Image (cartoon, rainbow, N blue to C red; front, side, top):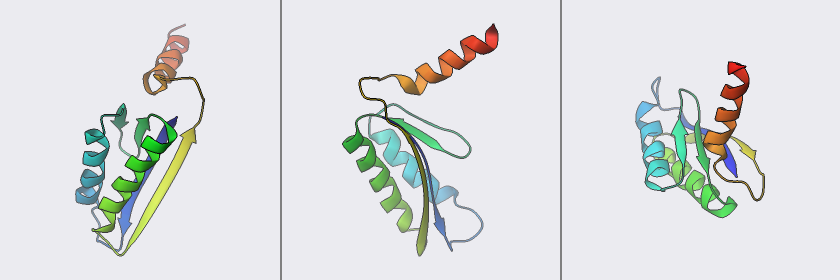
Length: 97
């Protein structure tokens, strides 16, 4: 399972960097394959382990505001792993043609 998610506090001011950093620390400490871009963090693993990390990252953000926004997109493809890099590699191959 590959999940892209974004979590941020609402009502905590203009910058959410501290809250997002707390969430990303949890993702990185999970040991699951992950990457963070300007708007989303991607994480790959089995359903229960990925959703546990997303829940804990969301819980960390709750401390920064009175409300939290969570956006999540999942690619559920049983029997496949390494897709966090594989999908991008296949795209780059096609772009190089």
